Length: 192
Image 1 (tube, rainbow, N blue to C red):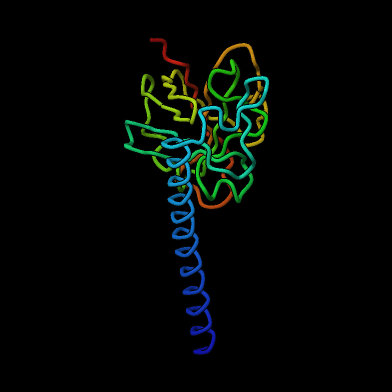
Image 2 (cartoon, one colour; image 1 turned 90 degrees about the vertical axis):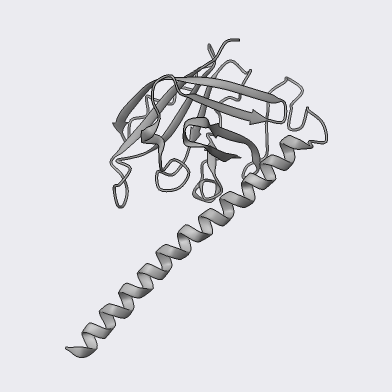
């Protein structure tokens, strides 16, 4: 019986060490991505970096391309092209196929609830969200929040009629494991 107790303690310690390592690794990757995003924004070789001939912004997958600033949370989060698990370890993922500011479409940014969007539930209607890219700064105002089932595919429409920003993350925020729902934040571009 003593051997089983020791085995369970060792297994428990291994799980705790692994979890701590995952958190530390994610923070290191996010910090590195933020540094890369700042570098591309502060001193891009040209304001047309990653711009296609048709004017669209097309960065390579997995690259840090900008910063999502959330003033209420005092957060600067790197925006990474893509939403694969490796991309989301680096920061906020830009959903492939969605648009960027000034492209008159749905901009979809996703992040983990336990890392970059840990405090997303503290945001309120009217709060500002800012996207900083090599070609400019763009401010949005939160207009609505919604909780949907995790398999609800109606949220990401990829419409290209009007510019809107969607932030998505898993919900509930304190859930352990694969969360059954998604927390959606809608924002519209602020007019000057």
